[in-house]
Length: 499
Image (cartoon, rainbow, N blue to C red):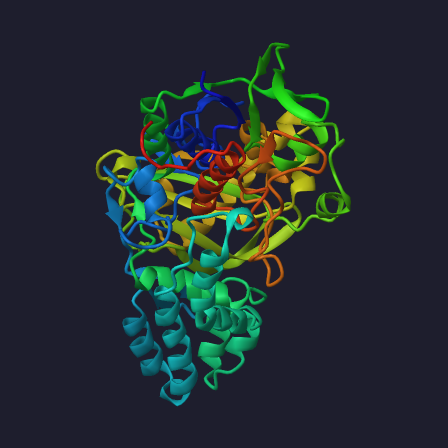
């Protein structure tokens, strides 16, 4: 009889766990609290429009590049249609002057040189860094727990690239941009790159992916992308149970043996893997019984991705004056928009007119999002009328700001939808509404938490609460690697073909 694996959570990691589990002959059962798969990789439909909550770009859309193998094995790459942007973002200053970050490093370099020839050395250092990182391919066939001498030799061959990574990880966006002599470039690039405390490595890596066309947009967005993985999982014979919230992980003699649902029903398996919220798993489902000082400190002093407020608008026009780009158009506001007590003096807007599947013909979805304070929303959520009024007030302010920048737009808005951190908590269970879990930093970018918990056998954790930085590629890799570890412990070869 095949051994069995229970998977808690039907997000991308859960689906990847299920697919690779089935490929290796395990009976897999996914238990998902929501009524659809995908977790934080999701979208939602409103009045004929689809608001995407996750898909700006996906690493691994080019065959032969990092992560493509996962999407191919998981059934996503065979039918997808990829859109590659020409622009990464457009940034307008207070004078209305637009600055564009182009995806092609050669085009971006010439654009910068035209603005500031006197900065040719630092410009070419920047664009050469983009080109170099566009060729970066990390070995991802094995998790760290299973690496051997041959794998370490492969890493040794990458020492030049690793040294380059180390150099750029130590340089922040703010510090790098100070090197520009031209004050316009110095100020604009600092703002346009998004966060002056970010390591420059992240900027070079992101733009390198775009230069290489290795991270395009999957037409149909997150919902279509998840559908292809769920179809693959079901075709492999996997089971998935929706609207089944796991309340407790059953443990006997310090060995995970099953789960108990909120409705009181119990299910048992040889292995239990949680791809659900990390804090809920460790401190609720397992009652905090299997932790050490490292785990305790991580959750007592969290450094998380800030939660978001999403404003999705359905517009009776393609709104071509809002240029399409990966990170959208950012422009200053004459009147700041206040959200959770914080004033925002800029507005960033994404126009999805390049994806006709998200809106009726001739129309488009535009989306605005803001980082926000979780505690504010948790408190206001306790007063339903106040919560609803605050969401509507934010939508009014955003539409008014857009209409001022693009006159006439307000009259074309026929759908509006506002999602807050509490929306993510309600549908995904993610702690404090953090959409990618642990924030990466120079210290944490290459680190991961253990897949196991101290003193507990036959149990693994996978997903964004194990790997800092989160994201869709990490989710797939985490599922792949966790099943590989289980196969190793089970003394059986790991395969990526149908059993």
